[in-house]
Length: 155
Image 1 (cartoon, one colour):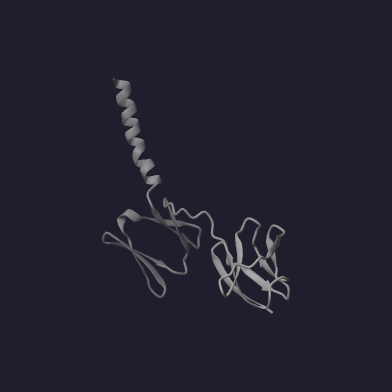
Image 2 (cartoon, rainbow, N blue to C red):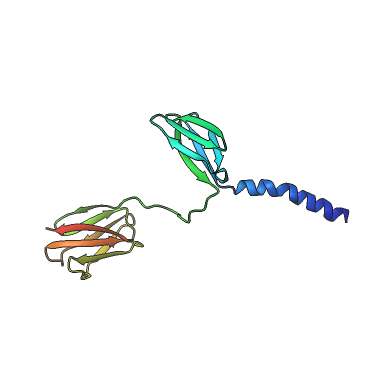
């Protein structure tokens, strides 16, 4: 009986620490390398003025110079976002379009302005993809890469 009570008391002491680790928190990163944290359950009010960041929580106010706050992040919040790809850069030449930062795993389709999907040949070296335009007539085309659409003109 005493053992069970002791185990129960130990578990109860560890519970607040475990809950605190998962509490959604705003983290301010300062120029000197230090951080400040505000737990979001306190419903902080954040104001930005010309040169200050003001955080008000339950009657207390913290002011930070904007020049001192390098960035702010969140911890304890799951967004479901694994990675954000940078914007697609490309270059159109006479008979091909080169897409930078595109791999062979990316989904690419080409449509004319009438909505017809065009047969194209795509080659990739791992980090860039080259789309051959040799079989396309001159005109305006829409290229969709992983849900992003770009417009280009076949000269």
